[in-house]
Amino acid sequence: MNYHKQFEAIAKLLRAVQSVLIIQADNPDADSLGSSVALSDLCQQLAISSQLYCATTLSNYLQYIDGFNQVVDQVNQDFDLTIFVDVSTKTLLAKLIELPLLSQIKQKPVIVLDHHQEIDNQIDFATVIINDSLASSTGEIIFQLTKHLNIQLTKLGLNAILASILGDTQSLSNQLTKAETYRLVADLIDQGANRFELDKKRKALNSLPLDIFHYKADLIKRTEFYYDNAIAVLVLRQEDINNYSAQYNQIALMQNDLLQVQNVKVILIIKYYQDQHLTTGIRANYGYPIASQLAKHFNGGGHQYASGINLIKQDLNLFKKDIIIKANQLLNEINDNHQTL
Image (tube, rainbow, N blue to C red):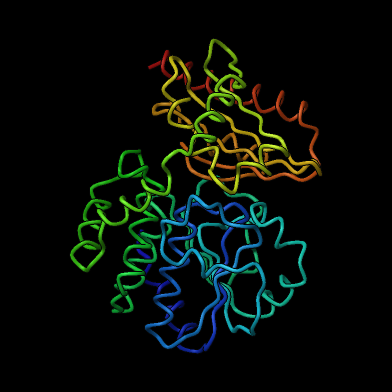
């Protein structure tokens, strides 16, 4: 995708401001955080102050990305411009939507940088939107923006973009990885990014404490399988969230193993909170790109192989039944298409 027109509009906005608010979705991942840190570094090169904001607490597994501690849940100064990263649907900003901060955001220019498919309930008050589903990550788009602006990021920003690309491509192993992705990673390394250092910190942080190892065994036992094991479902309740979510991301803990189970085509990891708030991480195996369609059916969004849902006041049993049926329907459509070819 050619972003020239949007990049020119963004450049014009950046030349006119002194302070930028950078916002992630309610459940940020490596791309969300890496993109935010990289944008903050970009702003610093332009002598623009920035605040990194997220309405929810970041999971500790993201601490391997330098800049983790810059993210706050309270905006403590005025800002002239807001940039939403790795999100272009209001559905994934449920916490922010409830806050008075939103009205302040709407009074000033807004930029949206994203790469998700199947978007409903868009951020309709944005001044400039880039949402390119062909990009490996939002970090990739930001790196292209730095080139357009002729800005050299520091090592902090370069490593942040590298982390965002590696996060969304599962270390350059999934379908989002294209030839251009490898060229961008090589360019990042040429400019000073250090993949070895980044991977070393990530692996050290994500090593399993003994209690998490035993907890994982419990989660394996609790996983349910439907339709000849094609759909794996794991439900996490408030106790799981309170005791483990901040320490270790359950999707990261379980997804690789569940996707390796024979005949599993899609996994659903549902977090169900005490107030009936519900989130669902969806991951699909290669050849079954239903994740974004499935999420969209429940007002969520994401990629073909990885997406998410965030809903308020849901009946768990009803939702679980509905999403399993819908997932099976989408899988059957793929099987039918294969049979007609």
